[in-house]
Length: 399
Image (cartoon, rainbow, N blue to C red; front, top):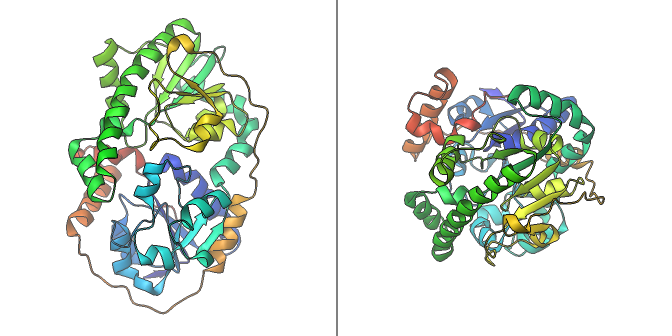
């Protein structure tokens, strides 16, 4: 077995991996070894490493997969860090993503972007104060540092996807994941702690908004000389959006591109305007000065509302659309990655322990292996029933 300092888990590649790679590179310069693995594909590889620190994108409970699997292997012999990847949470999401057991409240190291999340979420749900560290938002740090790459990235993306650089680009990372959720998936979320009434309302509300969005974007494409790039939520495929377009308006207008290639950051930097349903990407873009808006055809339920939603322009329908203005006030966060490196180093201590080869949930462990084999060797085409929902999140282990 190979001794290593840190294992980073990544759930959604386009959301997380660029930030994690930045931190990994800085750890390497400090002589700290680390690997980046996928929560969906690489669980088998954990039996090959003995880490000191394990970092998850989010960590709700010791009983939730794959945390339960990881804990079975390493137990209390390593430090666990929760990056809390999503921190601009609605009230419904707060309740669902709150710390659920004493392990998470008292043992896990918790990262907070700022005092707001620390005080109004972590401390509210009784997380041990000494385990909370304010780290800043690495995603925002990267965005700020990439602003001067706009023309370079814009030209490269234009060539690859046949986009017109003389037009304004409207980038729309959409968050209608619940609209595509099956009843089985909704029931699974409810069993994991999501409020039952809100869960079904969330699906219904998302479906209503998605239907209006298709009509809104059709009108926008006809009346504005834009290149419109729609990016589905990480859990939704381009094909699923194509099906909705075909159902509602028969076809996709020529100046609309459905695209999940590259990271959200590259598209935000390269675009002139950023809009969405309720994606936090809009707030990220706003904070670096981009013109932004939220498409809100129906009043946003209280359980979905987040404080920053009112800080940006909300569009109810096409007739009320006005091209958003440039935001000249930016909020700089330039040292989040350095701060996180210092936090991680504080917890790197070698403990002598033995790997436990226990796998209680053999079904999900086997599913991880099936996904790995399918995507690594067969381009995710083998066992497509199991690989299709997560194929965009595949990557080889980064050592």
